[in-house]
Amino acid sequence: MSDKINLTLNVWRQKSPKSAGKFEAYDVKNVDVNSSFLEMIDVLNEDLTKKGQDPIEFDHDCREGICGTCGAMVNGRPHGPLKNTTLCQLHMREFKNNETITIEPFRSTSLPIVKDLVVDRSAFDNIIKSGGFISAKTGSGQDANAILIPKPDADDAFNSAQCIGCSACVAACPNASAMLFVAAKVNHLAKLPQGQAERKSRVKSMVLAMDKSGFGNCSNAYECEAACPKGISVANIAAMNKDFMKAGIFS
Image (cartoon, rainbow, N blue to C red):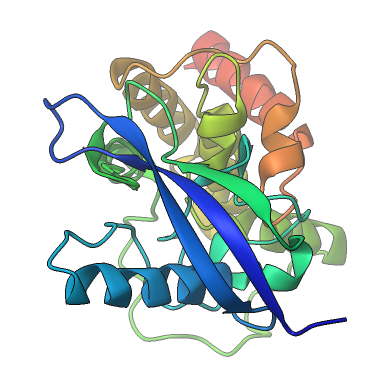
């Protein structure tokens, strides 16, 4: 098997939020199959720059699958064909020689396109600012064993905390719902002793902020869980809905 492949990329190009966008085709030759998807775009951008053309804009930061900055639709799937994998950790060996790859930004009216593959995720930031934190002044960090937490609760909190806020769940959902993201952030703190004081106000304020941002509602398509690079379970949504009902009834 050759360690080099040739590809045709159909990339969404859009100069600004208000301008019309379109797909543009690029032939990319001798792509190293061991390079990452973003490294492949880096090479293409170097070539475009040398030709005096605008490079393809895309979000990236750590390139280690941790920060949640990167993300795009690859052949109609958020982050590409691999399960539990971010775009920056997708490697070109997953594609075939002479394959055509369509690359476009995550689509949602609540996550507007800034340029090319870059989307504005400030709606997620607003949801977190509405209550995704613990406001109590706890002083300096305590020893890990100072507050005893049952192992199942600690595991559930950790699993929810893995959400990196990449917005793949929104892009995959037919309703552009942010329920999985919000539920993961709510349940992470709801499972910990430190999060109990603001538990009711937190879930209400974050759900309200989500609705205000214009995200759709959940209709149990479960595409969010399938697209999530961290495998966040839709069970988080059920748990958040339960907390939301309790907060409304008893507060």
